[in-house]
Every structure is written in structure tokens, then in C-alpha cells.
Image 1 (tube, rainbow, N blue to C red):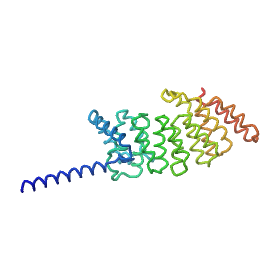
Image 2: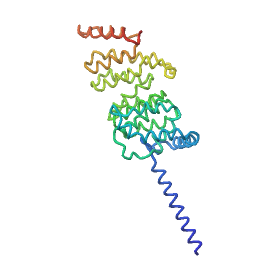
Image 3: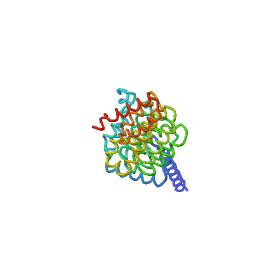
Image 4: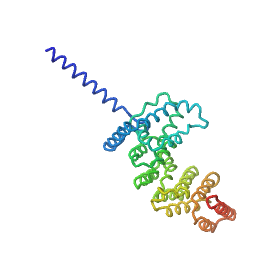
Length: 316
């Protein structure tokens, strides 16, 4: 009888321990999402990859952990509003991918007493640094992050940019679909999707600008058109590999020049900068077409745009 009682107590203790461990595991989450936001197979694959990486290269995980611990001190010493976390994380190289994905989506320490600006910088920096690696293993996490209820425009922009840098059909189509949906996330997506240099994205951005949105939205879209059609970016082999350069840059140039006279002030300045970034050969012809029927003052403005285009440092 005594043996049965001892056995019963042992089983109960084991059950409580298992329950506690299970509860701890289910409570684990990243700084952006909890693991259960990932599909079961994607989650299992990522957890396994993280486990292997932690054994093979524990230094990468330790380095990231120390950086996070240093965030309060870095925030206290910052010169701008935010600590330049993205640049620091990029400096860690490819070995930091799995530690960062673990921090983003699997098992990160609680925020604790990290102040708002430091927490914001940490979350933005992580997702931007992951995006810069352009590694397909990050795709499930980046898709899940973009589907969160986060509404902060800067955070949404960072997530959209990171996903866009993967350059896949799925990423492009996801961003286009979200950009068409009105709501608090829309501007963040429009601001970040220019890093997805695909034709469908360029055409979606062009269509948005040609629809003559308000000035604030026009500025975001113009900047994204400058990004998506950037002559400098298209010199990068990994981006040029899509074979869509001409279509993307032509669509961006056409929408920007056509919309130039529709805006004034900061919006026109943003469009001008984007035209120079895209640096497409059709720009003078597009400007001449826009001059037809325009008022003399507007014709002169277009002439000034073409002059700046011809004298752009990119054309030297």
C-alpha cells in the first residue's frame, strides 16, 4: 500500500513537472510573434534549425543576447532618436540569421523594463537585418510578422521591406494585395514594398500614384517607386536576376513624370528625387509629352526636371 502511495506521488510530481515544462514552452514567444503564428511544419523546421545552429555556433546566439542586454546603455548614449540597431546586426553576418529568427518568433526574453524607443529600435533592427540577408528560411517568419495586428507605420514598413527583399512571387503578390486594402497598415506597406523589385509591385505602386492620392500618400509612393526602380539597385546581380529591370524602371518613370505636375511642395520634391533615382532613358520624352497642353509655368517646371535629370550624378 505504501509503495502504491509513493508511486502515485511520483507520477503526480512527474505530471506536474511535465505540465510546467509544457506551459513554459507554450508561453515562449519572440519579440514580434509567438511560435504558434507559424504553420506547424514551418515551426518544426525552424525550431530544429535553431537547435542545430545553437549547438554548432553558440557564439552567434551569445553575441545577439549580449547586444540585447546592451540596448539600455546604447539607448542612453544614442545621438538620434533610435539606436542604429540594423547596422549593428548586419555587421554580425549570416551566422546571425537563426539567432535573429529565434528572437523574432520563437523564444526571446520578455521586454522587461526596456524603454519604448529602445524596444522599437530592437524590433525594427531585427526584422530589417533579417530581410537584408535575403534568405528563404526567413520567409515563414516574415509572412507571419506582416500578418500580425501591428499597426505602427514604421514597424509595418520594416516588415514589408524585409519580406519584399526576398523578391519571390509570393512576397510580391502578398505586398500588392495588402497595399490595395485600405486600413491602418496600408501606408506602412506602401512605404516598404519598394524593396521588392518586381514588375507587379512597380505596376501596383504606379497605379496608386496615378490615381492621385493625397500628398502624404503620394510622398510614400513616390519614394517607393524610386526604390523599386533604382538604377543603382538594379546593378546588383541578385536583383537583376529577375529579368524585369526594364519593365520595372519604365513603369516607375512613367508614373512619376506623369504625376509630377499634379503635386507641389514636398510631394513634388519626393517625385523629383525618385525620377533621378530611377534614371530611366524615357524621362525626357515623358516630360515632353507632359508639356503638351500644360501652362507655361508648368512647362518650365518640366524643363527644369529634365535639366536636373541630364545633370544627375548617376548619368556621369
